[in-house]
Length: 105
Image (tube, rainbow, N blue to C red; front, side, top):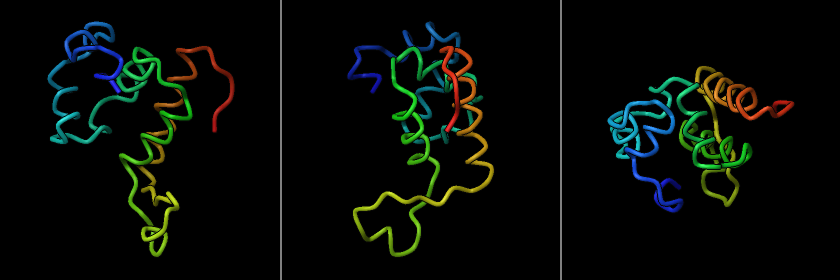
């Protein structure tokens, strides 16, 4: 998404006042996305202009695991550990707060 929108990692880090090395390591798969603070992830999402639903889906795909037989179908049902669910909620709450949006999931 970042590349498609023409942002370098350093530009995104500067825009969001975050550490470029953390972003690099998340993009490379060396760190999980929930290793960064929810506020940082929400800032990245907003800086990239990604909408709330796309963000929610992407976070769930990143942190969830396919459940049972559904993993073999075209369905995208994911199991989320309670701490992962909480992380997604915190990111979306921060997204809402910063964007002035009303309502959660």
